[in-house]
Structure formats: C-alpha cells, structure tokens
Image 1 (cartoon, helix red, strand yellow):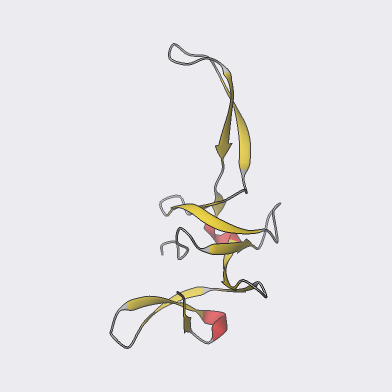
Image 2: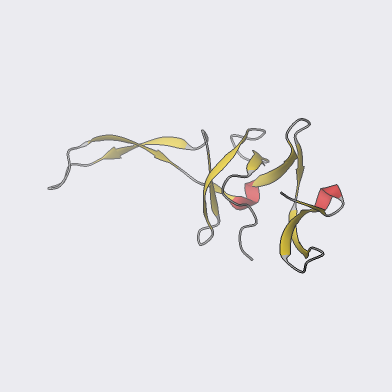
Length: 106
C-alpha cells in the first residue's frame, strides 16, 4: 500500500524523538515510505574531499517513516486521523478521514 500522505499536508509526529511536533510535508518518497517535514530531521553530513568537491559540512534533511506521522484534520484543536479512500457522489476517488466519520479531506 502506498503512502496516504501528500505534499502540502499538515501532519503530527506520533512517535520518535520529535513526538508531538506538527509541520507541513515538503516531500514524500513512496518507494522508501519516507515523509520529509518542514523543520524536522535536519542533520549535518561531513563530506570527504574528492576530485570534484572540497571537504566540509553539508546540511541535509532526513526523512521520517510514514507510519510515524498522522494527518492533522483540524488545525485549531490539533485532531489527527487515519486516511482512507472512498468515492464521492461523482464517482471520483477521494481521501477520507476515518476519525471524522469518513469526512472528505480537502
């Protein structure tokens, strides 16, 4: 099953060192099941010198596993929900919030 979180969604981290942090999704890698969140997972990589570059430090962003985040459905209260798929009245497939009585996610 693919990642049900999309770029631009607001998510809350539900486990790990950054538990409780909310942020906007910058990038999603479905092949690795990773989610990149704005301001979370910033690391410093020490680069060895090669024929093409100097040695030094490089700032990188590390992804978080998609199972460790939950979609925020209400920004004010911070309520989260699992994401499912369903059909709307026109027959199009849409994402729905399970904890909000299958309400469509905008």
